[in-house]
Length: 74
Ligand code: SF4
Ligand code: SF4
Image (tube, rainbow, N blue to C red):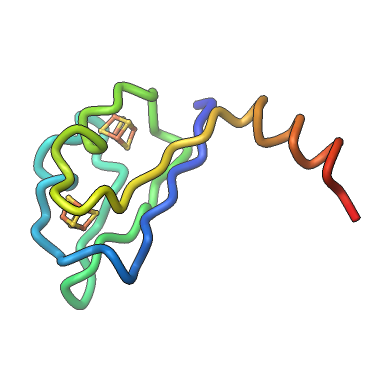
């Protein structure tokens, strides 16, 4: 799918809300932290972002990411 999923490992408190709410099981909980292990399955519904109590999750459309890379490459 067309999104890159990032979890800020410092902000994440391991509550597993993102794991519970994601319809495509993008996240796994490992050592009390959320890992976006299946980011290719993200459909951009934003349910995880709404549910996360610490605003640890960011999703970026892959076409936007590619655009950034093109303009800000060093
Ligand atoms: S909902 Fe947020 S704080 Fe909770 S496990 Fe997921 S990323 Fe971490
Ligand atoms: S945006 Fe939706 S599909 Fe993507 S990781 Fe979050 S809950 Fe899962």
